[in-house]
Image 1 (cartoon, rainbow, N blue to C red):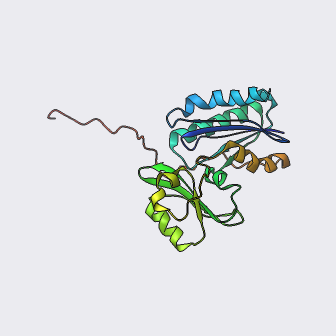
Image 2 (cartoon, rainbow, N blue to C red):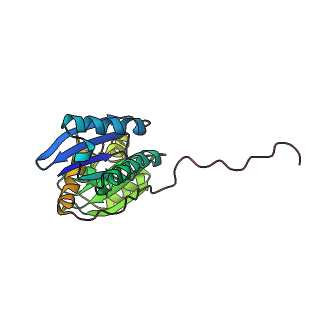
Image 3 (cartoon, rainbow, N blue to C red):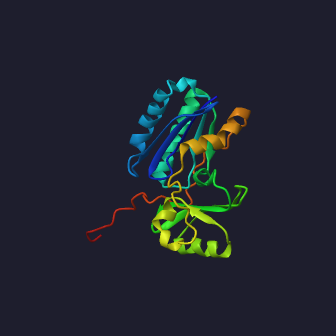
Length: 221
């Protein structure tokens, strides 16, 4: 088994290559405006570090968001293209699930959604998602936390609005979804040969960019 995992749902482009005995190589670049430029070189870099080539891959794992339109499109189109070209399955995973993986106890994950909002989801002590994914302003998330005691908070959205969650923050927690954590989430399904879900992005809202409207008439008819 050789699984390539990557996530582009946040300003970070994270990539990891996982084999039967764990993570073989990984990479992270943070630049919110260069997902399209960074992903392919990062994939090439981790493959080279493990002395592997694309034809060696047996499965793909990709973060499906929520996240900005452009970043998610880069990741999901790359996953679909590789899966089709290589004839291997591509497994999408909610990117908030990736951040929550490996944390004991109830946890709420929040990432930056821009527009003074966060993407968020909450997970119980067993790691099961009990709320979200949703997009809201930080005070709305704080109200949810006040109604559900015992939840710690992590993610770059939590850091950005840390004053909203002063009693819940996990110190030194991951800011962005790690591709190595994504690989570990998907590996059991890939080894078992389970069919993946469709590669559907989780946008939660319309893209910031919209098609231009009709031209306005500036002279009298």
